[in-house]
Image (cartoon, rainbow, N blue to C red; front, top):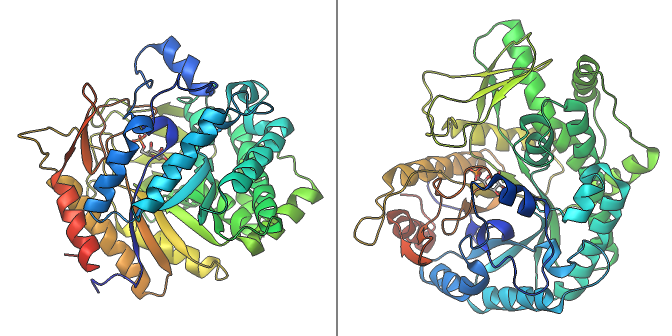
Length: 467
Ligand code: BGP
């Protein structure tokens, strides 16, 4: 099958901090990246892709190239500079102008409320580990619904809880830069899902016209051999990174098989999960009410059993082969010689996307619909004569779109695809050399250049057929 369903969205994704720049515009407050990145002095996010000023040009490119959906996020600290309390009218106005421009250009905005950018004062109070943060997040969401709810049809509560906690508490490349603290990671994921649930409830009780969902990064996990130990390692990482969050999303509870593995990981790491009856009431309500789920998919992993202490090396430079990822009580990611990888060691395995889509349908038959809300290939693009010959990206995207069509044929309801990213943007832990965009950005001049992939994507979108 090579034909996409009717009304399929051929979108592209961005996130506020990665695209907007203009960090001193209006009365914007800091999120937890500002001081951290300034202290590190390696990457400067202050201009990013200057989407703050250039969004009319970017949306005109969307219109021209048939990109009919866009993921944007609302920077919490443009609305509430301190996370709570006083509101900045400049920020409020900016998102009105941005959303209006999306609608004027026929580009459906999918708006994320939290994309890795907790306000600094709330981060200092413990981020998602604190009740204050959760309460403030609900207030921020309620404000956005009331302000923009008549224009926005699709809301996303939180982007990638797993990536947040992996970055903050396991890998340590997101502030507060802790390593291997699995209990904190698990607690924070639970709390994020409870906060998500409260926001879903606020949205439904407010009777807004649109739809609401959550976005998870979901990476399939395969044993590298057929040994019982390697199978167990793959299952453990799958439950930790995927199934725990999916159960919270769709069941509103952790099923027996999930809990068995999570409690085992907690025991190995001397931790406990704090939950309350109210948490599960809130999760269960949201599980019934949620309208869609977004899946971000880039890679899958191959695992073997691992008995040692946790060890991780994050490849943030594109030095191929330098990654290490081994977690105590879980397993170790290993290279599969049959599977190619990007320069950042991300295995290119479209089958993992098809398998994941089918897994969601089979395990959570009450889901309503899915979107692939991010997928794409980071590469060291070269601008030659005003364009980039990014054939590797085209090949990557084609294979993943095919995987989606295969899943659709198997009965999975997927209503859209958002390539990461619309234009080249700032990458949290890799800076500006890892490019994903359909449009090349010269970060000096902020000029945009359509890559070969943009012309290719335009054809797919125009015909609704994969070639
Ligand atoms: C996802 C995030 C995006 C984006 C993307 C690419 O996890 O939602 O914000 O950054 O990954 O990742 P990276 O920039 O690390 O290559």
